[in-house]
Structures are given as C-alpha cells and as structure tokens.
Length: 150
Image (tube, rainbow, N blue to C red; front, side, top):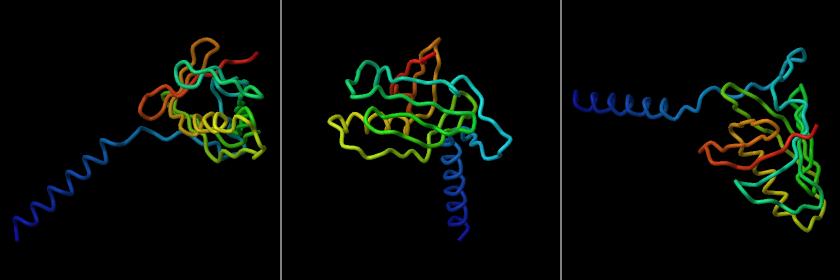
C-alpha cells in the first residue's frame, strides 16, 4: 500500500515537472479595455509580404499585406481575399493572430492565399530589422517575412 502511494506521488510530481517544462512563457496581451492601446513597432504600419519561409516569393493577383491598429484589429489581404482579425502582443516579441477571417472570392492562387493566412495564424514571435518583419513559429522556424511600407 505504501509503495503504491509513493509511486503515485512520484508520477504526479513527474507530470507536474513535465507540464512546467512545456510552458511557453506569458501569453500575448489582448487589448480588451477601451482605454488600453496596443503599442509597438508592428502597430499602425502597413506590412507587405516579402517572402514565405526563408526564400519563396509568391506571385499573387494582389500583394498580401496586413495592418494592426492600436485596438489590436487586423486588416489586410491574403493576396486574393480581404482578411480581418485580432492581434495580441506580448513580452519578448510574442505575437498572436486570432479570429482571422477572410472573404471567399474565387482566386487562381487560392493555395498561396491560404499559406499567407496560415503564416499569420502560426506566428509566435517576430523580429524587426530596419524595415523587415520576420515571423517565427513556436518551433523557431522562419514562417516568412514582410516589408514595412511608409
């Protein structure tokens, strides 16, 4: 009986340690108060798609882009359809796009448009170097890059 209790306690402790090790840091902050404003170098800028992954350029009917406003609203285009949603920013360049929705127009490059939307949905961190914005996934893999438009 005592061995069974010790074994169960050890399993619970190991499970708690495993869960603690998987923690990904603080979640990005979602602006939910009317007086709170989202701030940072990605906010109130237009970002045009430059690359998917580390080197692939897409030939789309319209150049994909997005803008995040001070209330965290996202607007833009995936290259075929308009997109809208929400963005949240956190410590250590954390970013999360949520509630992304697109129109559903017929487009000859629908698969590429879905890749652009998928890149935003999977963005976990960002890095800005001058006028370039790079998104990384949770595994630190480069998802793609955007160019700031002044």
